[in-house]
Length: 338
Image 1 (tube, rainbow, N blue to C red):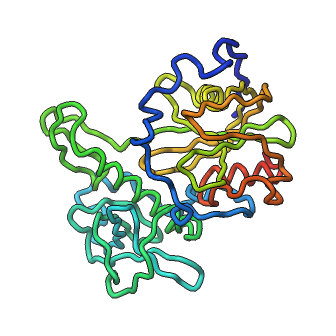
Image 2: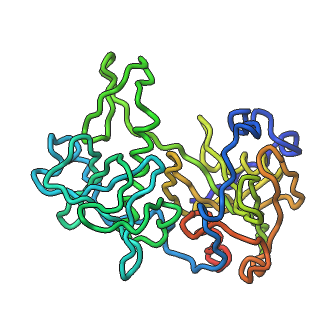
Image 3: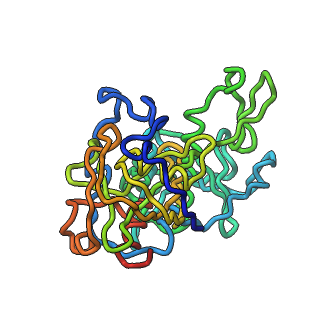
């Protein structure tokens, strides 16, 4: 998908466009999240491009028709993944790498969320507490998508992304947006019903754009947020607003954050990012301006970096981890694929 956006009004590109970010988008310092540590978001400097973003991998059938059954497992045993309050899950260090540890149940547990099946095996998720063993199997660690998502196999990676996303939805949406009444859970965890109006409430996903802005040659723009570990830079990103196209959001967010216009907006790939409920839509775009005019309410710093700097490690102290679509896009651009 390619889109050439019309030139913007100069009055809106000299600084932050009118009607841009709201106070809710940029909370005051005391309301912003705590800094992210390197332990939570590991440092990685070299990686090879992957065919798809690592959290976009999946090897199971979500079985949407089975959700309507009274027993989506249809009498079969179920492998149940426990998700704790920090969205961590039990992990075993196998010979080929980390593996999720499932609780083997003879049937679908009450309150479990149906995830689907693979090779005739049914999978589900439950919210629960940490333990040292699961069904007699040792748990080497409890970890989340950021820590182990890149190293899991396709089946585990897809199931974990789905489980975390649907659990997040349940945790954040316990009451009807129509009447305020506590909802009842239906369709194996995939629908909440308003008991007063009868309306169905479905899981939501917030679209966000993430874009590598380049100069048409060998330079790209990377920025950093103040809450990130020192020296970490990434590509620009922001949420799609109501009534806005993804391409329009790319142009608006770039203008807001670094004060430049873009064209040749091209779609690259997408990736679920359930922190808490986003779908990242990845793009590249060509800059029409060179001078960066940074909105420090949006980002702390932004700079132009060359392919050679990123390839050699002579640029930022750290890039995003390989589990992120940001790194997927950076790696492909450095390799000359974008």
